[in-house]
Length: 167
Image (cartoon, rainbow, N blue to C red):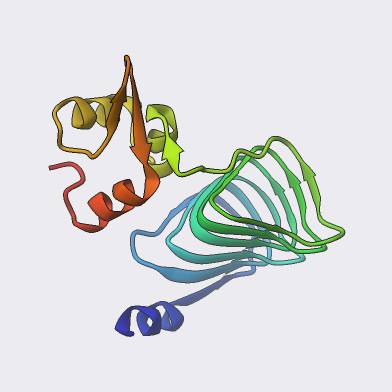
């Protein structure tokens, strides 16, 4: 209950033209209506408004796009493309909603229940060497499949939520 309330209180509207890296460790409701170039790493909800023009690699939980976006998009919970969305770049959504009229130019790779080591590295935004180290030492839940590792996304989510990542 309290978690949702905290998210709703942190609403940030960005109407200006910005460049650089925006990174949020805590959940926020971020809405971009202007121009943005660089890198966006969010938790919570990210809305790219109808008037926005964004050239960035974006990662977040719940991402809603109404404007123009060029770059790689990783949505850990859901990616929604509104009818006015124009997306150019590869997308990696867990769940995907595309409204009629939205334009997507690029590849889409949805996370399935099992991820390989590269997929987990991208999903958790950590380098591949750390994933391999955690898996080989038994710190991270995974299944050895011959010489490759498979990771159940739900178990990885539970592991992260338990605070064991990086320990």
